[in-house]
Image (cartoon, rainbow, N blue to C red; front, side, top):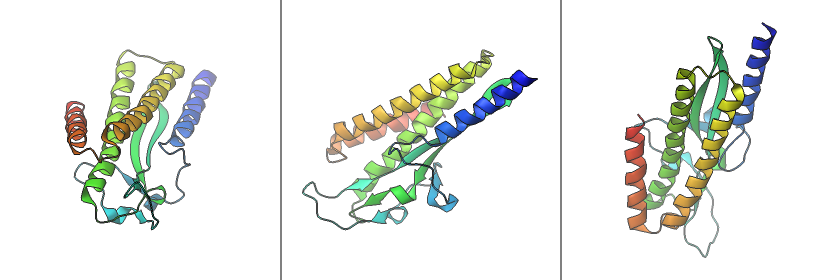
Length: 184
């Protein structure tokens, strides 16, 4: 009984740890209205971003803050998790609310977040089906996927030069969307 209680407390602490993980390294927002949960059919719009006016030699810029929340609990003595991907409005901004190609690039950052949410859920479900009870195994898998998410997002920006290479941008969109459909 006490072992089960300790496991539940540990899983809650894991959930709190993962709630603070994000692409930009920011803490969780104080207001629920400041976030948008990824939802098919609800694309981002420039109205979701703060406009920042400053000169840049690199052209128009935008930042999309994506955060994964992972909350753990016990289900029949086996760890389970609720995983969400959120767009953080207060940490997301643009220098141009007219550039639709830039918006498409930023949307794909959010879509990549959803892609990795689905990967995490798939891995968790696989462990659950195996009857895995060790929370450390789940923690390892979740941390690994979140690390891969950050690396994947950086590779996306590098390969597309932040969306400026149109052919690369189209390729990444297709690949991400295909993978989202596969993991549905």
